[in-house]
Amino acid sequence: MYGEVAIAVNSAFNYLILSFADKVCHRPAGKRRLLAAAVAGAFPVVLFGGAIVPAAAAFVAMTVIAFGLHRNAALKGAGATLTAALFAGGLLTVVNPSGFGIGGTAAVFTSCLFASGGLHLLAVRWRGAEDDAAAADFRVETEIELFGKNIPISAFADSGNACTEPLSGAPVHFISYRAVKEQLPREIRAALENLPKDGVPDLSVFPAEFRSALRPIRLQTVGGSAWAVGFRVSSWGFCGPENVRLGGYIVFTENAAEYPLGADAILHRSSLIHLKERGSTDADRS
Image 1 (cartoon, one colour):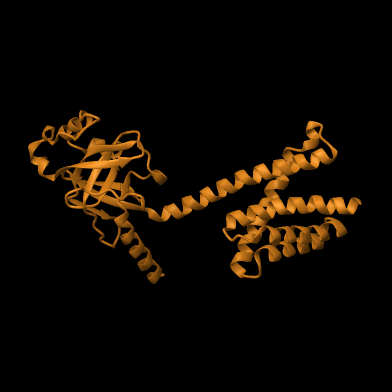
Image 2: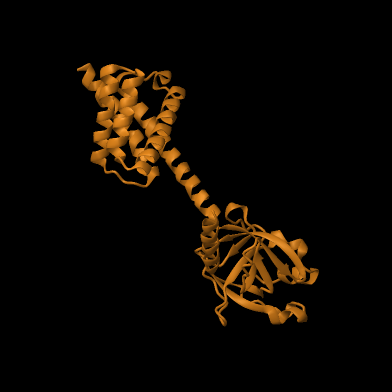
């Protein structure tokens, strides 16, 4: 009877660990397959104790049954499983139910609850880290000419930015006003900072020599629609040997705006074409 209980408890913890690996590896194995792997991993440990060979055999059995024999899937699944096992073991060492006066069956359920909650939080953070790593491919260093000054700007290509200038259909990019404020002419700063928050912007408040490059841009936001002033891009390109030039209009956002990965600009989604071409070129070179 004791052996059956030990196998059931061990299988439950194995299932939690394998479920975590299944989530972060993005290769759904199915609940039945995970359950079979969890039980197969429990038998060697319960029957032969915590010796190295039985533990290694249990680990191999679990990963093969859960993730198959495909090399990449097996290695990724094994890595995630090992990470989850170490994390859950460390968590239950620090937060041990016996320290709260809990014992017996209640301790087992409490341990499973702690492990499940901890692994869920770890999975969320894991996926967030993967998203950040993927997003990093869309960050690029650029240099823009604004009112006669060349300014280096880190930019993020956003596939969700489909904003265009209504008459020409030209792409609209966004630059943090905070990042370029000190580089702008005083007259431009004064005009921008004194624009009304509502309605179509009055372009006559800007110096006459700049008005031909200005356009009212209608923005669609979560809270509805708003108007902003668009400045036609004179010269803007990626830093490096590609000599990629960006066109269209730019809109300066308010001081509080925060962009992904610490970038100072959000590029129109059309710029993704240039980034993909650059990635293909880099791959060819390597």
